[in-house]
Image (cartoon, rainbow, N blue to C red):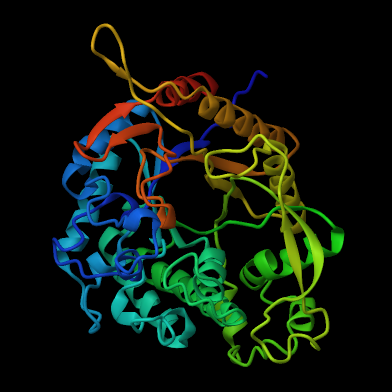
Length: 460
């Protein structure tokens, strides 16, 4: 396929603070809920982000990787405990200066800084030890995170191209409070909806705070990981309500779907939604970010959605869905490879929320990468599977653009291998291989492929 992407299209890559920075007790930083979660046996092999990629000390060399890659945008997150390390809300200038230097260097390299304000590292002081109080279960958290967003926006100002309020609030609500996979791992079922609403509220308040401090020049966005399902139509619709429209509709339409209230009746009373909340949530944004990796296969089940709820068995429409095995091929994460679904999702978003520009803010593949040493002593990582994955998904993005969908950018996950949350260091997504013992960086074949793709397919 001959592809020339529109002029100004952002080709980038992405990272997140806790996954790469390390230096968890340096520069004034204090613990986040992920420090606590990883240090209390909830991650594979007990891995933690204590050192990660040591980006905090190696950031200058790592930004040179971006320059060599030829991207024109870089998506990274601000570590909240590094900027607001104490409950009094006072900013830590050392932390702000660290991120300010990163922004300046990116601009020097001609790379647009795309700043994610919340990528899961909620300060531990905002939550109780076991997560059953505080955190996203409390309305006050939304206001405190908005205050933090204003502090960052005041510091970085209009040097930032786009401020993203939240990354994947589905994970921050459903996996973190409803389930046990992510920090704080509460496993409290329907409390996920309370967390989701407070995340939505934070999004709106953060938008207001950023606009007040940084002005109208930087763009505003939010990044969602929509649950893309195939299978039984009723199950697909149910997951869409609970996993997707619980965020999309209040943010982009100013309301929750009535069906969402109907199918959760008896397990969630939604009394945490206060008068005026939806007006606060429904803020104008400039772009919607989509993180896409794979699809799910679902069908309706006779089981109650939340067995721990005494009213679940009698609540109308409270049945759960079964998540079925998907056809291969699969990545190292066990996720199926389905580029067509990325195309379909972009087109559907364009149809359902017209006038909203889109960016693919994460897309990538975990592979069983191995380092090989050539006869000349040069270290190499051959990752043809990743190259094929990226090529096919970029072709899907281009198809959507050709059919009139307003897609403004594509960000490969990730610049380099890193701490992959509950999977620790067992999964490698990077375009750059990281030897975690020596912290050596080795450009994979996919790094060179993506560099050539950008050069060959960008509008002149």
